[in-house]
Every structure is written in C-alpha cells, then in structure tokens.
Amino acid sequence: SLALLEEARALGNATEELIPLIFYEIGYTHRQLHNLGESVKWYQQALDSHPESVDVHIARGNYFFAVGDEAKADREFEWARTLGLESEAARLGIVVQHLARGRQEHAIRELQALTGEMTSRKGRALLAELFLESGRDDEGQAVIEALAGKDPRGAITLYRKGRLALLQQ
Picture (tube, rainbow, N blue to C red):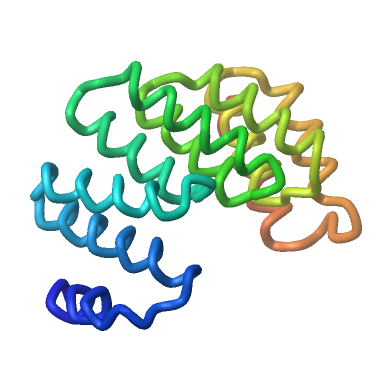
C-alpha cells in the first residue's frame, strides 16, 4: 500500500483536497509500520498543505502521545478540537485519547460538551458507559433514559439498562 500511495503522490495531478489525504495516509502507513520518524514527517507535510485538517492534528497528537511528549500531544488535540467543533468524529477521537491516557473526567467533560452542543447518540452512549463505570449511576441512568427516547424496549436500550442493573449490584 505504501508503494501505491507514493505513486499517487508522485503523479502530481492530485486535487488540492487529495494532496493532504495522500500525505496523511503515507504518514499513517508509516506509523502502522512503526516508522515513527517517517510518520511525523508525512503528517507535517499534510499539515503544511492543509493546516485546517482535524484528522492530521489528531494523527500528530497520536504521534506525540506515542513518543511520550504529552504537552505537544495536548496542543495538537486542542487544535483538532478547536477546528472540529462541528465534527462528531473529531471530538469522539479526542475523547478516546483522553481515555487512553487515563483521563476519564476529561473524557466525561468533553462528552458532556459534545452532547450539549449536538445530537450525538454515540457520544451519549459513551457518556452513559463512563458514568456507570465511574459509579455515577444516577447520571448514567438519566443518559440511558434520554437515549431510550422513542425506543424504550429496543435491544440497545435494554442492554444499557441491564448493564446499569449489573453495576448496581
């Protein structure tokens, strides 16, 4: 796959939108191959060609997190959050990073902001799970009830209510 991405980059006839994507994918492929130095080089090229790319800022944040530079990782994630306020996927990606770093309260605050600003069933579901895991059963139950909405007997609603019951035992 790396050879094909390099070939696409070398063609030189990619659209403005495709160029940062190609750079990003080359960087991602290098990261998967554990070539972190090459990875960050390609992420930087992607960012140079498209500084507003939320995905590239998240990727760079992941890189800095992987090499132990949490201050730089935080800056990249904050840029991604600022640029991607309307992007549910970007904000959920930031939540995942908080969780990977053991920052459950940060993740909860981000999910509360996300679910307060936009309809995000995924965000609400994850928020309910985090509330339940952290012993905040009343808050988890309230989110579960809000998620149930029009389908109080749906499989997912029943599953979440079952999880709540198990955690309360």
